[in-house]
Image (cartoon, rainbow over all chains, first blue to last red; front, side):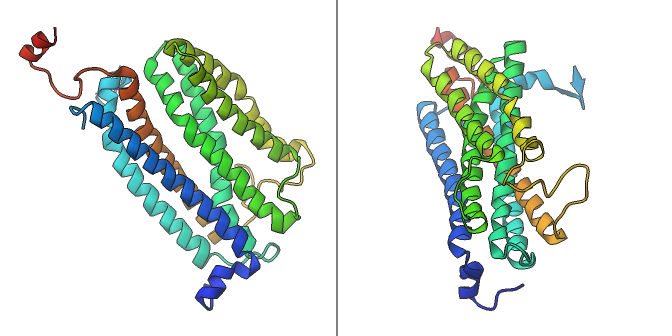
Length: 52
Length: 253
């Protein structure tokens, strides 16, 4: 492990903005997709209560 | 036809596929969470700093898996579209429909994370390089396939038209893959290939492969979940979720 402190980890050797934007955007897209599907599934389940 | 004692054709009917997909999703979701967590741990805490690119190289742990999935999911979508056209199987068309948004999302992420890597490394967010341009075209192809489907009211015509478009567009995938060899691109060549030893440290490779496997599991889970929604929305059948009694069937008439 090469990080002396949390700040060093967040700074990413000066590339923090680029690295965290990449990982943040990816996480955001994936979480959003899962939530959107959750809601879509809830909508279909509400119309068809017989489906689990 | 029954391999492993299972009648696989049974699952080509939406009624049988729906509960099957429901039982696969939790396993794939758990595998995705585990693999991605482990991959992030290796990627941030075990893999060393790159001697040329510094810490910015860590972007590849999302960039490369996303780019691979964008191409792979397109092939999967086109394959299901082709099977649908060949066998006139509506479940195959639904599968192609369910894959498209996730593929488009990964294409977008590959482009975005690529820009995030390009700015500090090349000094430009975007260049009209063969690799980048063909990947951008892939994003438009996903968009085209999805838009064409929604723009045609008749479901069967929408299925066929978008399937043909998806199939024709598959020629772009080898172009993206080999673009770094065919043209003199700014985008670097492949660090990992089938034929040569990987040009990166073992821990970096491990993190990248774990993330790729995690994205794979994520894609299966998300696609199957969307598939279940699509089945219900398209079929809107009264009660195949439960066993109907003779009386209920009689009353339904």
